[in-house]
Image (cartoon, rainbow over all chains, first blue to last red; front, side):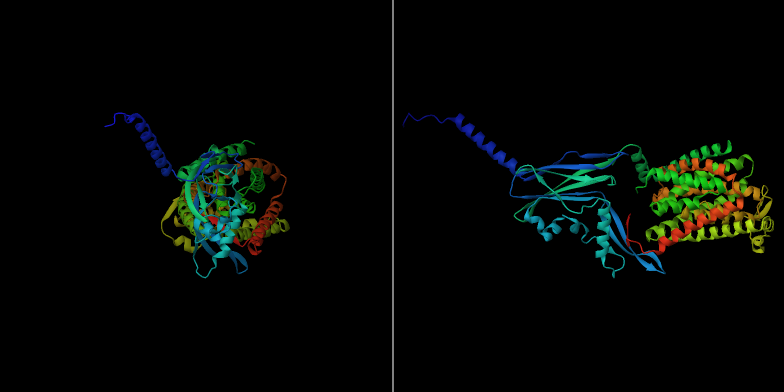
Length: 259
Length: 294
């Protein structure tokens, strides 16, 4: 037996093993959060006061792969919307043809990068990006002979006139290859409620990742109190209105009797 | 809805002025004028009923002091009014659902304003041409036989009447319906109905009708708030505030205008509003589509 064999350096093996395990663990962690795209909102809460003149939804993001394309979609609270087309009946213009749109967001905004992928209309529609995808299949005809296209157009242009639907998509601004930001303008008439911020990552012309985040837009102050009361405690609100009308009427009565 | 506060206050002051000069409620002018300003018709109606409560209480106080309110017959009318108001609310909701509420409100106003305006115009002209004639003849028509035959008779001591409760109840019911659907107190209907159909003493009519209107409109406000959420208190408040200023000036001016001439002027104004509503209905709108968020 050769005695000059060096003893196995257990300590060193241990260290190597430890480093190796750590590396494995590290990869494991990396695998667990292998998402390429991550976004962050500057504020997760917007307060609407009585002097509210609009706000911005600020979105920051990071992608770990610069050969990808990013899109962000913001949708406001949803409601059913009916669009009527007027027709002439006995000389008068009367609401005649109705098309109902189920669960339409009362705010919609979207921002896209400048990749080729965003010109692929089919892909955009199937991913849920853009006004086409928003309106597609939402029309519920009360009368099957109506062509819903005009109603869809009317709905979109009415929302665009109120500045709650975009005329053109916003741009995603890349700060460098990995970091980007964009901001959505929330007009003064934007509805309050929960907004969804969805992010999309496209790689090689395919949708690779999506994520969702929420933002609360709430009214604060006196207006909020009145608005909240009118929609949550209807009876109380009605009684409150009557009582205030009685008080002011009483005041008017006193003014009238005195002279 | 983006209408400047100032214009709401001015509108309130204007209608208050009219009501001060002519001694009318003015509700029949407020609702169409709010619609012209771009307030959705259902909100205009819901809010206007809130304003009616205020102007009603303000008016009734004076009559109450002088003891010119018959609470018994007023309460019978009120029961009818609450029933009519509920029927009106259902009617309102159904029309909202089928998308015809704006149309029906406009049409009812055209009929209402058109007939009131024409009646006042003729009456005013006749009084100017032949003073002191017509009035006395009209004072009391005999109750038609049919009314005398109706059951559930009741004695109303204050008004010196012995009449079926169905008659004041029915009159109240129709006025309640008008409050819910049109946001008018219905004084223009109640006053002549109480004089000519019920045969009530003229002295008691104004106070009693106002007493009834306060409660039916208060009920209507609560129902509108609960069912269709079309009461905008802030809007009502500015209307009332404007009204206070307007009434003051109106009463001052009223002392300088003779009655018949004033009625002709009011009639012409009412007809102008009626015409404007009519034109709006018959001219092809620039946007054929109406978007309603539910």
